[in-house]
Amino acid sequence: MGIISNRLNQLTESATLAMAQKSRELRDQGIDVINLSIGEPDFDTPEFIKNAAKQALDENYTHYPPVPGYLELRESIVKKLRRDNNLEYQINQIVVSTGAKQAISNVFYSILNPGEEVIIPAPFWVSYADMVQLAEGVPVVISTTIENNFKVTPQQIIAAITPKTKALIFSSPCNPTGTVYSKAELREIAMALKDFPHITIVSDEIYELINFNGGHESIAQFEDIKNQVVIVNGVSKGFAMTGFRLGYIAAPKAIADACTKFQGQTTSGTNTIAQRAAMAALQADPKDNQDIQLMVNAFKERRDLLISLIEQIPGFQLNTPPGAFYLFPNITSFFGKTDGKTIIRNSPDLVVFILEKANVALVDGEAFGDPNCLRLSYATSKEMLVEAANRIKDACSLLH
Ligand code: PMP
Ligand code: GLU
Image (cartoon, rainbow, N blue to C red):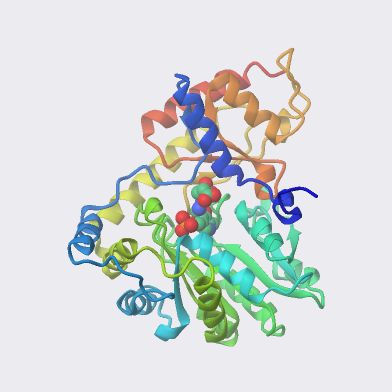
């Protein structure tokens, strides 16, 4: 009998975190690695948010908080959903967690019985499928292609539904593709799912603010299905607060209650300083907040720059993603090529080749359910992006 459980032995390591760790290690060895692997803003947390965190400490917000989050924070989330998304929620439908990551995991533990299925359109964020499996559910992956801007159709979703289907999870803006569904496309998906009221739609909206084509659309806006939707959001991306570890859900009350019960037996309420800082962040209206505008504009400029650079490298097939801070090119034209020593058979091979030859860290597409692609994060400075693209170009020119 092994010490570690089968459940954990079957769990794969998060590829994004593994790649970030690998580039830290190489840097510690003195190797000049450019890290385009992890999806995290390089900006510092805005001053007004840091001040709220400092004040929280001075005001002794250092005791156990309520399990689903401080009342005032949940009130601010309700107001944010009204102000930014035109959505009405009650405070008891909001649960604050240690990152959107925990929020999503709580939901799966709360709704899945063993063997129940979760539909996951690919490319998907690395942790969805593993979280489903940890909760003894079964991921059912449906594929999309770059030609269709990685969008899933309502027909594909319907075709994947079985008597065991319990949920659908997707992100818009999407990690890893940057895809953003339009209101009309979300309506079609909503209309397809309204005939299946037992299916929960987990709508991961953590990249809400990083959208270059205009306002954010949530699938929860369609009244027919609103009581099937769990909105997941957080402060990591839009407010450059990854280390604070704070996310939340807005959910049907039964699911919010279940997540609170689960969290009460696992981690309790989220860190108090982070809660007070998140409150300041969410009370700011992003439409007239300069710190946020500055970051979003910078991401757009970087996207355009990186596209113009990567387009010049033969073999990378790109689209123009309207949101998040990733490019997800198709790189199948490298498969079968070699530099005389290494043969590139798949996306992980190319990512390792680029890490070794160019010292640029990327994440392979397999981790996101699409073995034909790889992910570049452009949440770093323009100088770094130019240098990284030059290095990738030189390394890839060795492959014939
Ligand atoms: N969902 C998506 C799509 C993400 O990219 C991330 C980033 N790690 C998360 C959820 C989790 O975010 P966090 O736990 O930092 O709030
Ligand atoms: N969401 C980020 C990414 O995809 C952060 C890493 C993680 O939590 O997986 O790179």
